[in-house]
Length: 330
Image (cartoon, rainbow, N blue to C red):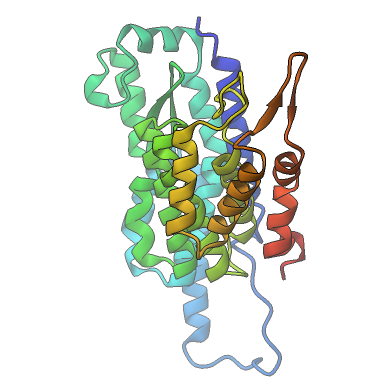
């Protein structure tokens, strides 16, 4: 039995909660109110609207009848090329809502002691070609057909949504959702690569945070604004302070390791024109004032450097103030 299952399951349920939260956007099937002064319908508008509603209705029926996500993918592959941009956006949102419900069920099939022991005996493979167990190979083929992909983290093998596979739909979407899909594809690639927290990956972490920052700047009223604001907060906290179980400082002195300080300095220098870069520069300023200490170590205890703790504890609120409370967005 693998000891990390409860931790991993909690992490993935949290990530799924974020995906589910994004499905709380206004229902894609809802009719927008007609703007004042535009009550009359121009020739062709009604038929175009009817066509879009018919397409969405057919997709809903496909979802109701589907035995797995592969059937939804087949529908989108066939129908998206001829769909309007607004219809394509709505279809993607419906697909994400489906994934939010289906992914925990699919993960549950994989995250059992029996299945994980089988994966362990095979060396924790994540591709169909590497899997020698017939049943697990069939499960994986089915998952991949629905644009899930297996990843391996802390000795566990399980599926996630393969947004990199969904990248093919970007050409049919609004620039808003196209850019969002690009960010999600970056996340899928990172999870597939199994990249962990280290000084060598810090600049890549910064670039992903900056990509979320750019989405927020470019689409202040974007369809995914609330989700991306939460995403940006989480990624910036991780960028600046890392994970509790992976300290970036010497435990005896509390001093930040040189390789992390140097990585922060490169980010501040090359990305100083971004909001993310200014936050990194602020952390470096505070580290300079504390002789590079993230914590204060004494004979009796360890405690936070007050100014750095203040930055950490107030970071989410500071970012929300910078971008505005998502609840206040129109």
